[in-house]
Each structure stands twice: as C-alpha cells, then as structure tokens.
Length: 149
Image 1 (cartoon, one colour):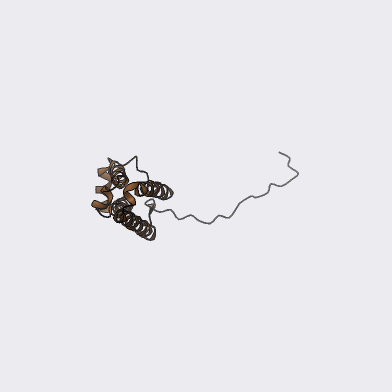
Image 2 (cartoon, rainbow, N blue to C red):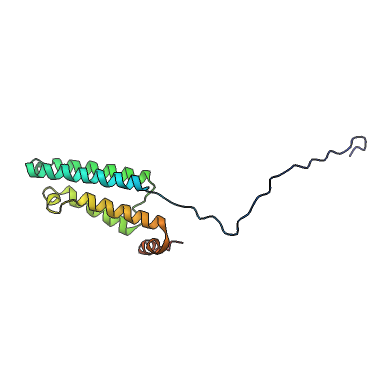
C-alpha cells in the first residue's frame, strides 16, 4: 500500500433487521371467497341452462353434452388460474371427473339435478379447507397423503 494516501473509512449505516423467532407462515388463499362464489353461480347457471334444454327436448340431441364439455374446460382453466392441481389429490380428481362425466351423458344430468353446482361447491370447500389449515385442513391434507402444517 502506498503510505501517501490515507485510507478511507467505508462504514455504511444499516437499518437494523428485526428477526422473528418463528418463520412467518405464508397464508395461502388460492380461491378467494368471491371467486368461489362466482364459480358456484356460474355452475348454477350452467345447470339451469342444461336443465331447460333437457326439458325442451333439445338437450337430448347432444347440445347439453357440448355445453358440458365447454363448462368442463372453463372450470379446468379457472381452477388452473387459481393454482389448484387435480392430479395430486385423488379426492379432487375423482370429484371433478365424476362431475364432468355425469354431466356429459345426455338425459342423465337432468335426473341428478344440479351436478355442476354440487361438484364445484365440493371442490371449492376442499381447496379452502386445505388452505385454511387447522383440523379441517389436516383432514383434507391427510386424505391426499400429506400432512398440512
């Protein structure tokens, strides 16, 4: 080092960081309450349209099947946008598969009533229970083969 130049003191002021004892739990809320309500209302409207078409006799010709396929695609995209995976959970997969299958068979969807509405309510409740945690979240997680913390 050259002795001719004095060394500069490069001390920087830092804001003290407060460390917490426990790591913050990240609150997951994949399906917000208003999004779940919108899904249920949309499912109810799809059920009403399909039921009306069945009663008029048009749905038996295959129009309700086309509506069911489109509704399945819409709900699949909607749940994907909310970061909900169906493949990892057998319970959610069976619920969505049985709902879609029952609705795609002409005439059968009007016998069981509001299948889309019941299926979407069940899926929204399952996802919200997983996200909530607690006893209900642990039960929902245990049915999927993993323990919710």
